[in-house]
Length: 192
Image 1 (cartoon, one colour):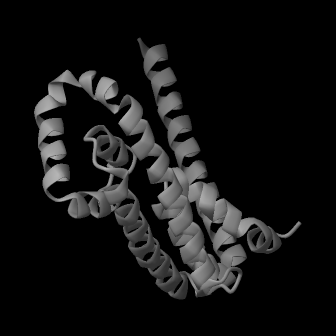
Image 2: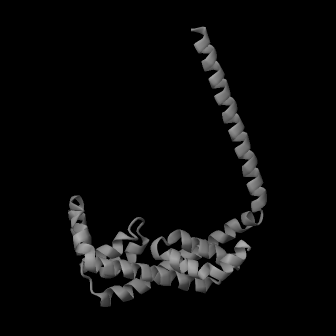
Image 3: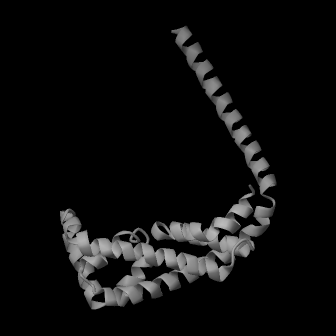
């Protein structure tokens, strides 16, 4: 089966699942696929937003249920945790929407929000807005990136041949150097 057929058939489902945990790379690739005409742009945005929203909602609920006990284990970071929880209570919209854009905060952010006991009535609409903004931004970046890499993708087989030859040359040079080093070492040992 052709990779393009797989993307066209299962791309949206893969985007939903992939964006539940790690979303940026998946979303960018979805944008590239939309640019290539394999997927529809707005369905990519909707799929990624849905997956991101579901993932954060589950983490939020886990944070509400187990977050207090989990966060107590990080005794060295209690001051930062308290500061984050205070920020969540004072500016929930900023934290809920913004945590989606903070690198490395994608998993712990919703857990912290849930552990801070922020009301689900506040979290859910902010989560939806954040997911849509995030999905639209990263899908658009992927789509625009598709403009840049589209000519390169069409000539991928030539690029792979060039890379293969480059790797052969690099390996040959390393092999020759190792051989000379080994030969010099043996001759130095035989002189002793």
